Length: 535
Image (cartoon, rainbow, N blue to C red):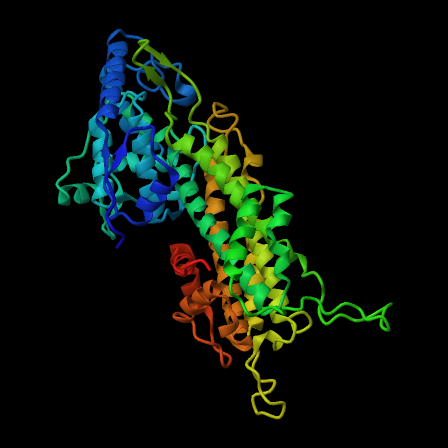
């Protein structure tokens, strides 16, 4: 359980992406509550909505049908029924159920967007949503069915139905009905009034939930990749000069500079490198030609690693900026300006920024898998690994009974190659697949939810590739002598060895892969390294 932090004030303006991911994955760490100033704004926009309804004005989705049915005005007395029917006809999701952390992220983000105070929603609705979050009452939401405009209509309908006591949920890990879960938690379902059902479903919160978690995963993967590069440089007896600060000062992309600086820090104190470099100067009598003991330059997958990981770091930074705006926005339709006394019809539900950010993120993340897979080839292949055993098999005497019987990391490399190919396959941009739908009302859509789901899937695949590579690097470090590693990379080695012992003969390694992937995703591996004081 994570230590409890300060309460999260849900105010529609100050929610950050890191907080979303932290609460989604550590729900006991903090409790979110509606801020007082947000409640005041919400009440003002709700009062304006009620005033406009009383005046008999047609308002989209409030006193009119939805989508291409917006030419049909609905009587005020039918407004609650209209909202119920909206949630029911949108219950058309498909595919696997979203993971609990995705659902928690979605709930927090949706509450925050409504708390901005321009959606015409009562405070009771948002407070109930936050109470469900606190009680771990999580709607069962199918992942598939959103085109990303008008927001995440289909997935969010499952969230909205939970507040009314309909549908199914997980309540503290147990599947049950929403009505039963609310009753067990001492909460009353709400009857949605005019616009409230539409406000809950007509936004980008489901895609943003996936996106926030994919960004958190990408940050851990960037660290894991730089750690792998530092280990690879050592076990291959490479050239640490490739990461010199001077080089990166001359091309100062921030992410690239940061990756190189981290690798230099990780290599401090290493005894794995030849202090003479590429060798002594050519003697007078030998001037003309000499075969060097090792190459002056490492292959690109090591030498250019900061240039690859740095792209991901920079992509994460700007994607976070876009997503921070998104999770603090009013992204439903219509919106109410309580100061001016007007309602506005627009398209803030369009998830274009999330879509493009996630298409970029998944491409940069998948490139990491390709990088690590290529480094793995250098480590396991006796043609390139500078004297390590073939496939990192335990060394045996040529006439030993074990000679030729063990195959080391051969299967691991095959698996890594397959995982890498699958990650690269997912990089097809979802933003390119806009489809007209809903009787040509939604004739241009973002596909942001598909892009965000893809980004999450890619991160999962890359974590497994990184785990395989780190296991191979630890095996190589054992073969070289782990005492020669730098203190920081030795800390990583020691942490990995707590879940995966030295491979002294062929054995299944699928459990080891899963265990190391968890160390990466949870941040445990990073924290183990960061606990080592800088030299």
